[in-house]
Length: 353
Image 1 (cartoon, rainbow, N blue to C red):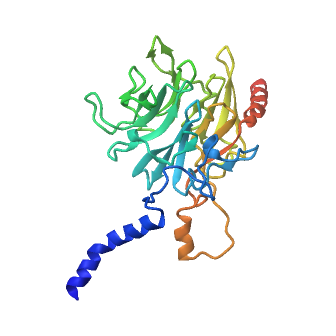
Image 2 (image 1 turned 90 degrees about the vertical axis):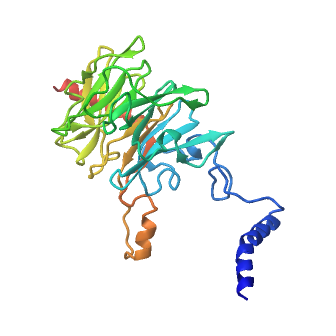
Image 3 (image 1 turned 120 degrees about the vertical axis):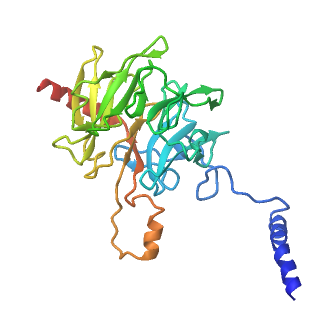
């Protein structure tokens, strides 16, 4: 009996495989590499095939991008066929940039982007340039004789349908202080954040691209660096407005709010204007925004907790860990028309000075 049981144990995987093959006409069933709807049909269309939002923020791609994990830093290619976003586990003990691509019209399941796969190299804050030729990100990896641990701006160049090897951005932008959140205009002007480790104050800078080389960064004016600390600002492709997460500014909705400033052709900035309680919440987790490739939609991270009426149970708490609205950050999106409304307010603020 003992030997018979051992034989059956070894044969069991083979028998199960035979059953699977017989049940599907001799074809091995594997999970589809594509995202599917409730009916099992591959997701197609722009933005992962999601219904388009209106003038109120909606959670983007629930169960796909917004899953219950701490999620932020959304960016996409100009043709709309690739999206990238960051997920965070713990207190940034583990981070990974996830990507989904539209292949033959069908969206692939999110997977870790190759440049983010090494667990020993932190990768955060991806940003694709408006022309789609570069993907920038922040990493603390070692390079050129520099030890790991200093957050710098890195870049990959588009090569065919993929990306080249990551390299540390050349020129005077990266320093011994941490740099964060690269954002680029159509003409290549780079906006970014630099932190002072001693004071923990973050300030916003920009660097002009001249003959293919970034110049000495300049500190943005006080109207943009408008609070106790400023974080991950996003410049528009045409450099006509900038969305700035600001901490410590009186009159805000929460501890960190999204503000917006507008720039004219003479490099004068108007504002800042709080982007309002549609976008900002009483919490302090508003610090990563971006635009869709066509500029029609605003994407931003936010922490919004779902209200519940039923008593908590252990099983309910376990299930909540895998659901958006559990206190972790999700990606939200809405029509970008609100920016034109805020432009009028910004002009009024400037005229009242």
